[in-house]
Every structure is written in C-alpha cells, then in structure tokens.
Image 1 (spheres, helix red, strand yellow):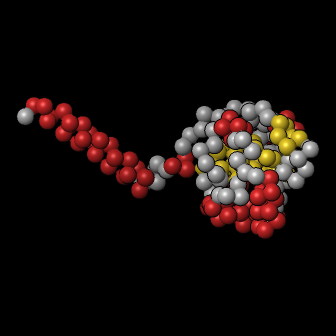
Image 2 (cartoon, rainbow, N blue to C red):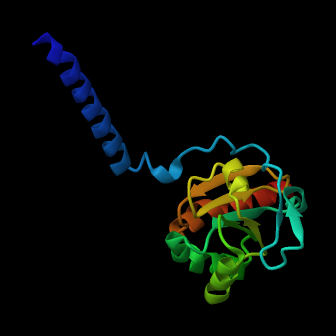
Image 3 (cartoon, one colour):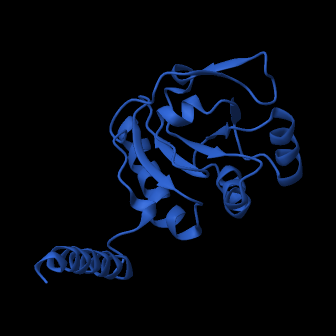
Length: 183
C-alpha cells in the first residue's frame, strides 16, 4: 500500500498545479502570449540581412537605430500572419511607427508573392532564410512583434498575432512613450 502513496501523491500535486495554472489563465493573469523575454531591455542582437525586394542590398541592426520602430516576424506559410496583416497595414497607413519585416524561414519568391497578394506594410522586409536571427531574438513562432527604441534596445515583445486591443492598449502607448523619451 505504501508503494502507491508516492505516485498518487505526485499525481495529486500535478493535478493541483494544473488547476492553479488554469485558474490563472481564466483570470487573465497567465497567458502564453505573455511569456517574458530575457531580451527585453537588452540591445537588438547584431545582424546583417538581405532585403527581400533587393537581395543584393543588406541592412544591419545598426542601420535601424535612431527611430522607434516595430520588427514583425512573419512568413508566407504562416496562417496567423494573414490574420494580423490587415492591422499591420493600418499601422503603416496611420504612421504609428515604421515596421521592419523579418521574413522568417521562407523562400524569397513566396514572400514576394505573399506581399504582392496581401499588401506591404513594411518599410523594409529582411530575409531570415535560415532562421538564425529569429533564434537570436528568441522567436517561438510566427508572428511575433518587437518594439525597438531609438537606441536599438528591445522594449516589448508580443507573441502571436496583434489584435486591435493589443495595438490600442499596449503597442501605441509603448511607442508614444518611447518616442517622447527619445525627443
């Protein structure tokens, strides 16, 4: 009988932990979209990547400094990217902040076709064909969006598609705060 107490106790503890996590998710205190990133507050990793529309032209992380901007990690094969894309088009239309695209683990022709079909909200879209820059950014999957300050420091990371609430309640206030701080 004693040999069954440890497995039963372990199972009960695991069940309680699961129940607690579910209650936190229902209360809005825990979400897979709010996984903290160890890179928030740190400089954007150094990179130099080819431009999707002009592969002979290269852009580095340092080229992007001096402005508050978003990096949006996307791919033509990403279903959720299609969901958030109209909102990215609206962000670009309104001039909220420049959006730098990071075409993640994608074929150039597929990325170009996708943007031709759905519109291009990006000031520039860079090709991360092998996914190394995405790995350095700690990308879990696409889409993901980062807010970068004028000094090139990551200030916020959003996992999953952006929706109107996230834009209104998180991204726009964060961008405005960073723009005001950079003068």
